[in-house]
Length: 88
Image (cartoon, rainbow, N blue to C red; front, side, top):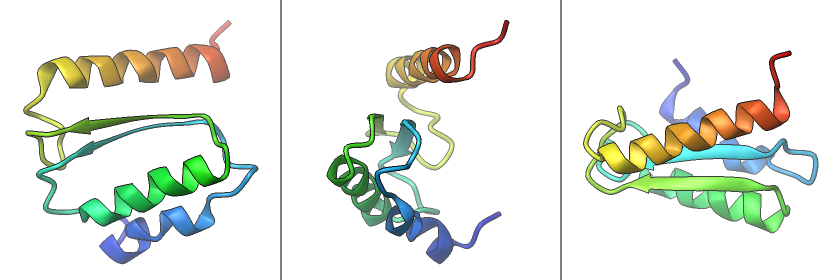
């Protein structure tokens, strides 16, 4: 596992060469601070990185309490994989 401080600094490594990104955050997360995801999304936007962000309001770190949003996130992950890492 990455330490919280290392994970929360991931936004500092975003640039114009960052790969397209799909990410989700459980707003009730006690492991990763909410500021870390705000910084990440802002960094992706500032560098024009194609991305989708899902915020699961009632979920924690496991994304467990927002079934419809979680399903939409999983659909986005499947679309991402099909587009960028297709299986032939």
